[in-house]
Image (cartoon, rainbow, N blue to C red):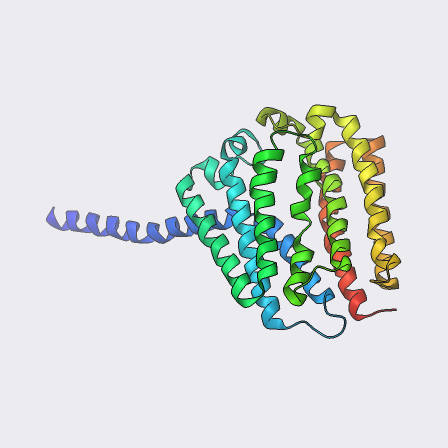
Amino acid sequence: MKGTGIRQRLRIAQFATAAAPLALSHRLRAFYVLTKPRVNALIVFCAVIGMFLAVPAGLPDLLTVLAATVGIACVAGAAAAMNCLIEQQIDARMTRTRGRPLPRGDLAPAEVLGFAGVLGGAGLTLLHQAVNPLTMWLTFATFVGYAVIYTVLLKPRTPQNIVIGGASGAMPPVLGWAAVTGEVPPDALLLFLIIFAWTPPHFWALALYRTADYARAGLPMLPVTHGPEYTRLSVLLYSLILFGVSLLPYATRMSGVVYLVAAVGLGARFVHYAWRLHRDYSDALARRTFRFSIAYLAWLFAALLVDHYLPL
């Protein structure tokens, strides 16, 4: 009997030892999910493109690129975590977001607040010390714009939340440009304008097939307040605006023929999706439009980079 009891205690100890790393791994993944890694990847990608476009010829200083990339990623992750913290009750009511760490109870609010503070503080410190103060302040302003102005003030109050709040989401190429040059010239603002015009049709495509979710959460998204027909028309109109804005880098001689061909092709495809949404809506089509909008922005900025180094 005594030997049996010892074996049982050994098995319990072995199970606890094996379970501890699993629990730690689960918590680390929860913190990682808080940073919205897929969104963060697109943010960092656009910022890095801005860094390379800021140099007329050759490559930017790679240590600056590395420091700026890590710093911007950290602050963007902190902003995402704060968004999750502020919207934890809303997220719990929405099918799309109820699996996030806070609604699931994987993390406590105090842990998320501490995580966001440490991550954001580290990112801002790195930007100030290893990049330049202008980039640090612009990144801090972007953090405030998303985590406070958009999340707290705009999103629960106005159907134009994504239009006004889109300014913070359009900042990454400006941050990248400022990181390399210490300036924000008109060319950087053109990149800002492209993302600013891209945000409404991108996000409203999502909102169209998630209308019931937003209504249940009590958020005044455009399909909830103005109906699906008005929203589909808005997607089409903003897609046309985006098409025009995307041609400005070529019109101002910031880019060449390579970019022009890509902008026209990608823009025509985006407008085609928006036209189909307007004329023959389905949730499946809205999902495809939303997914394409992400690819659109990535390919458009990639075309800018290719054109920069292979001008025609």
